[in-house]
Every structure is written in structure tokens, then in C-alpha cells.
Length: 87
Image (cartoon, rainbow, N blue to C red):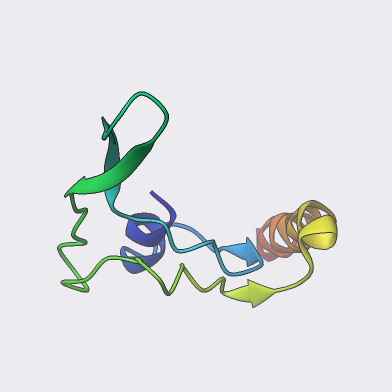
């Protein structure tokens, strides 16, 4: 969802690059003790014509994950204040 919203210009991503796991996986038992996970699907963004497998989704504003909420709230407040003063 984050890649789609970013690609459409509908969201500003704040934080760290996501983990990069895009392909849907299903477990398949190979014996009584082991199973493997096999990809069976792939998400494709219609704008970028790609997915985020292995690369993750880059944020628009890079900050440590621990600081992401504070940074997002700070920027939202600034944007809201700017919009109100423009009225």
C-alpha cells in the first residue's frame, strides 16, 4: 500500500526503507520435520511497473524508525499551520 500511495502522490512516507518482502509465500511441507516457503504471487504497481521485492520502498523523508512518528506529526502540524495562515 505504501508504494501505491507514494506512486500516486497521495502520501508522504516518513521513516526507513521497508524490508522488501513483496512476493506472497505459501508453506509446503517436505517431510514431517521440514517445510519450505514457495512464492506463488507477485504484486505489481501499475505506475512503476515493478514491485518492492528485495529493494523495499524508499521513504520520502528518511529518519530512524524510532523518530518517524514525531517527524510525521511535526511536518503535519507545519503543513496545517501553513494552510491556515494562507486563509
